[in-house]
Amino acid sequence: MTDAEEPVLTVDGVRHAFGDLTVLEDVSFSADRGSVVSLVGPNGSGKSTLLRIVAGLIEQTAGEVTVAASANRPVGYLPQTPAFRPQFSLAETLSFYGDLAEVDVDVDDRLRRVGLQNVPDRRVDALSGGMTRLLGIAQATIGDPPLLVLDEPSSGLDPVMVEHVSAVVDDLAGEGTTVLLATHNIDAVEQMADTVLVLDGGTIVAAEAPAALRERTGADTLTGALADVIERDETASVSVGKRGEGE
Image (cartoon, rainbow, N blue to C red; front, side, top):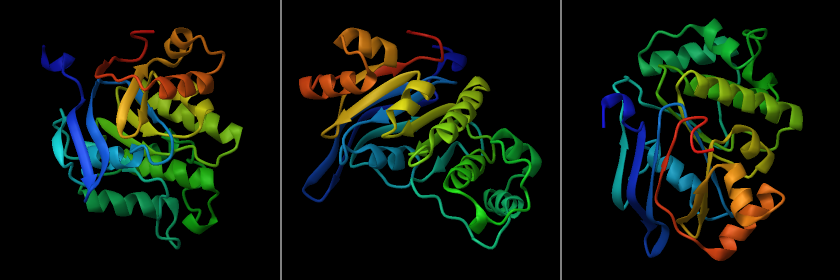
C-alpha cells in the first residue's frame, strides 16, 4: 500500500470501559481520504465516546487509533454542544482559536467555506443554533486537519439548515478532508454519508453505503434498514472507501 492509498483513519480493536461498564468492544474500521463516515445507533451505543477517542480527548482501554497525517493539527473536533466566548465576534473567535493552534487563519476564507462570510462581526451570543454549529465547523477546520470529527452537527436544525450543513460537509470531503460524524438525523445521513457505521451495544453491527444497506435489508427507508440490522445484531470490521466507491 502506497502512502497515497493509506487510510487517513484506522481504528483497530478499540475497547473502552468506565469501571465495570464496557462502552465499546472490539471496534475496528478505517476511512480513506475524502470519505464521509456516519456513526448511527441508539442512545448509549458509544457514538460520542468513540468520537472523543478518535479526537484524542480520552484514551481507549485497549486497541489502537491511527491518524495518518503530517499536519500540525491532525484532527479537528466539533463537540455536540459547541461553546464559544459569547462576547466575541465570529472573526475574533476564529482568530482566537488560530492563536491557540499556533497557525495562521484566513478568517474570511473560513467563514466563506461555511456560509457565514456576511456576518464576521456578529457576536457569538447573537447566533442561531445552526449558525453556532457552522462556526464550530469553521473552528474545527483551522489548520486544515485531514480528519474532522463532528458530534451531532445537524442536531435540532430545521430542514433547510440540515441541507446547508450537509453541503458544507460534502464540500469539505470533496476537497479531500475525511469526515467522521455522529448523528440521530437520518435525513442528514442520507445527504452526507458515503458509509454508515451502525453501533449497537458498543459494537459495529453494520457498515455500508446508505443505499446498499436499504437494498440488502429490503427496507423502503434508511430508518427501517437501521432497525433491521440492529435487530439482527450483525458484526463487521470494515475499510471505508472514498466518495463514490463501493456504491
